[in-house]
Amino acid sequence: MPTLVIVGAQWGDEAKGKIVDVLGAEADFVVRYSGGNNAGHTVIVAGEEHKFHLLPAGILHPGVTAVLGGGMVVCPPSLLSELDRTGAGGRPIGQLVVSPAAHVVFPYHRLLDQLEEEARGANKIGTTSRGIGPAYTDKVQRHGIRMGEFVRPEIFERRLREVLAVKNRLLSMFGAAEIEFEALFQEYSRYAERLRPHVAEVAPMLQAAVAEGKHVMFEGAQGTFLDLDHGTYPYVTSSHPTAGGACLGTGIGPRDIGSVLGVCKAYTTRVGSGPFPTELTDEVGELIRDQGQEFGTTTGRARRCGWLDLVALRHSCRINSMSGLILTRLDILGGIGDLKVCLGYRRDGMELHSPPSLIEDWSGIEPVYTTVPGWDEDLRSVRGLQDLPQSARDYLELVESHTGVPIAILSIGPARDETAVLRPDLIWAR
Ligand code: IMO
Ligand code: MG
Image 1: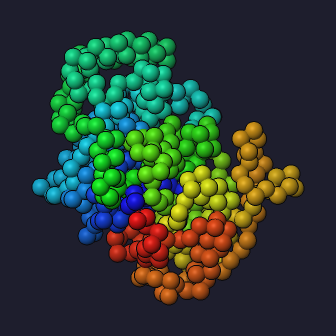
Image 2: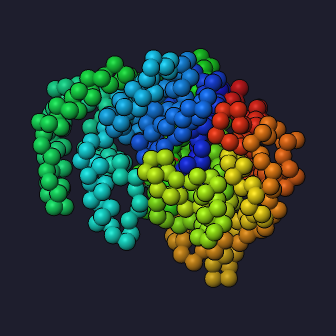
Image 3: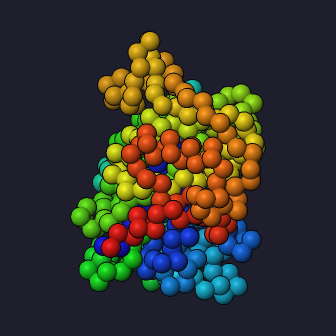
């Protein structure tokens, strides 16, 4: 069954976009299943940089059908401007299908995101302020407006009136200005008009594709530890980036998933607040940030950087039932000297070999490191294991032995060809 989930194995920003672009060459469908424009996926093709927030990165392949699944929250003006930008100058791109079950993000969601963050004060989550949490809140509260309603003018008008009345009461409670119905309705109706031709049922389309043996790739956004249930709650996003989310967010059943590849940086980064045991606040952390240009694609924020955490990664492999790992940015660790890798945690003198249980918290957790030799070689021309210095090979070996999951692909630079496929058999399950 050639169906494949590409999932973020850490806290997001693992370079999923590049991988989806590379593997998208063989895909018939590339499907986003969760999140919204909080994601930032960068793809470089022929020296040209493309930044995606809502569109699946696979859309750069003209033969691909790019799908936004029902598990997503979609900001219409962002989606349209991304579509215009990507197809500019008549560039051939894949066709776009948006699920009628996806929820629409409105300006009141963005406003409430900011107001709620301010109200949290020192406990703020550090959201991307794209209205993601409030849009999912409306979904769970059974108050949200879905794409299917949005593109039907009479229904959209009735629903927006009903919801905006409540939102305006909320905004007043926060001391913010109310939003006027007519201007919002007119502006968003124009977006709805443009999106209408793209809105179509997703589950039957994908089920038929699977039955026909088509190549279907699910493009994860965010990462495992930002998952609402499996992440470092409350410092998480409001959706399900984990591989299970691919079923819920699209209408494919669990037995129709052929393989799950977890994308993992050779070190760790995190944006926003929350636990990060291997964070480096010293000059080594700065060096990694500089060498890796670790600044957010969506918000421009400097990312927190740290060593590779194999306790977290092993947990992530289990949560996602990973069939293989994709290790990215190995090139960035070059020239740093000895490297540390976290193999356990310690708290109050006790060693832990998995993340703290959900009835505890992360306070006082210290990483237990092993130190391994680094490398000075430029790895960007590496195309196979034989091109790697021994110390880098040992680094891969440590990752595989600690997680029990084989490394299927190495990414050693942002360009399409800066990729080494080590285990082609693990990519598309037949
Ligand atoms: P990609 O797809 C990294 C983080 C935010 C914040 C938390 C909640 O590029 O990997 P939200 O706006 O979702 O309510 O913010 O989640 N976050 C991400 N961090 N990469 C992402 O996406 C992220 N999407 C959300 O920084 O800590
Ligand atoms: Mg990001």
